Length: 294
Image (cartoon, rainbow, N blue to C red; front, side, top):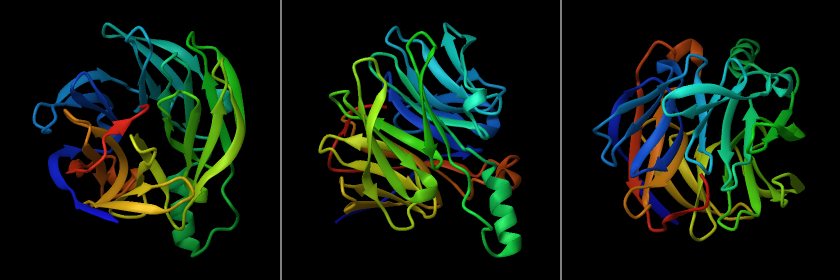
């Protein structure tokens, strides 16, 4: 198994999410600085690209270059064109709690997840009670067309989180954080989903932000540990990147797309970190380059 030790490139983030490699830079959302940022490959030149008062999360680009961003607390997907934000799609009726991560296909179809429930309150209550009274509710994965119309709503998803699309554009793989699972779907000609199946069932791995490599394996952040894992279809773990604090999202980028950028934080609990800047960008050089989307 491959083993790597990440190094810190940049600190001072509140809570980084949705890293993307685009235009030779690492783009990412920062929940509690309420902005979309980008930085150079070395993590030195950070730029504020857009402010998002509703708390930014998932990012992706339409075929014409417009940036889509999930605005979490108002359950919207925003379209950012030449610095101006407009409503692309309101998904509030399909969200149990905050909207969250997404991936955008080459044809402009978006796949957007949401928490389904207030995770931080649940964890606080579980901590006080010492146990979970019942399984948390499931929620929907929303499929949005390239013009901002809702094409499909996929129910019974257990906290749909990081997502990837294979290079041929035919398969979507979604992390279901609360069930430690990666689920796959066939992508039809219009972008709708079919043939749901288990891609990998893992043990105590809270599947968070992830990316795909050129060998068809997935690097994913395990939100229960200071690690990113490289996973084969079927669930075999073939690599690990160790980080200095909990890993919440990762992206393969850099000149050769062999730099695994990892967004880390001491916690995801907003009651603990919303006013702090202990988040980091960490990185490690890995053997296989990135592929597919995001």
